[in-house]
Length: 483
Image (cartoon, rainbow, N blue to C red; front, top):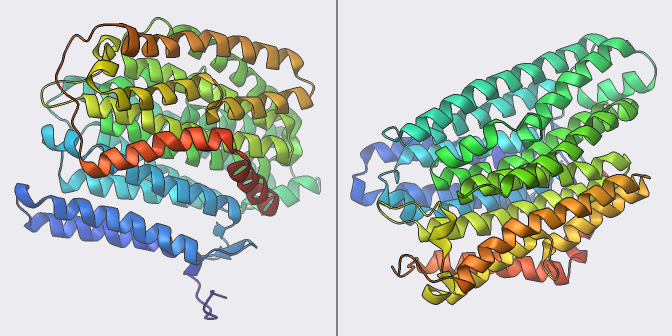
């Protein structure tokens, strides 16, 4: 039943329908627009994201609702993750407008690809069948490959797209193969149905564990965890910064949802097996990500290795195999993408026509040119480093506490030690902004809407750090009612 009392099979999937309609409209309308009127396509894409978010809020229900023959589920975890996905994509479009215009990328193609990738993300988040999950993954991934390669005259972008495509295809194959093994062992494509078969002892244990290895490998690739991280620094550096912002935010929410759907929703009976795998992935990611980031002079590569390390922290939440740990991991993922949006947003602002603010030296003396943007970047760096009172501190504290609760005190000690290592390269950016003389004194300019949203985004990191209870409570309730 819908909130209005009408029975409608597609009601839980109406936000996805809105995104699909918006993508089709942008695709058609953009054909009739000159370059000087591309703003119509831009605002139509923004309107599509806003419409999807509004429908999502209006259709909220506490109890999970299934649609499309049980292949699609709308539960509280999906509501929360989708809303933050809409926020991330909308912010990406706002932050990158001037950047895209200066590089000739302010075209309908990038808006359509952003909407279709977002559609894939939301389908993945709400997937309750292996088929739906795989379709969402392919829709998101293929759109991202094209977005990376949009700057066709840039050799780095094309090379990054090829690497991303080849390795992404490998990861998709791993996931498909793993899910097919689980299907063969359980005889059902339904995620919760397969969990019931396993809990009842009706599945072939050997085949399930064999498939589990492939599934965990695919999830690790999408998260960028070591040793499946090789694509992250090259794609982050080679892609246009606007696309890097997209890749570094909303898809992480989808990867978390996939981990929850498959590991917790389907393979919970084999928690002992996947906990051991995630333990190794978490440990390697935290160590290698933070150590290698120190040697980077390109801020996009530095943030790429930072992402690898942060995904290692997030995986710590799964090691408890209980709702508290999962909610800590969800809180960590949400706060990380909000922080990454600020960091990449500042990089976008400093970039201008003919110039990419990719080197750490480009941030020298930013406080002298724009004290406010330097302050926002400082908040982002402090949050990534886990310095109070930013939200990054509480996020790291929550997952480390979850590891201690699971009896992994030694892993918590390693996490704290790697956080101290990570603090070095984050604080190096702060040092460059506040204590070095600027290399380039070109003033930093931004549209009014970008200034307001970027400021609100940055201040939210402080507000959520001082009052984290609201967001953490939302994550706890969402997961408790979904699993």
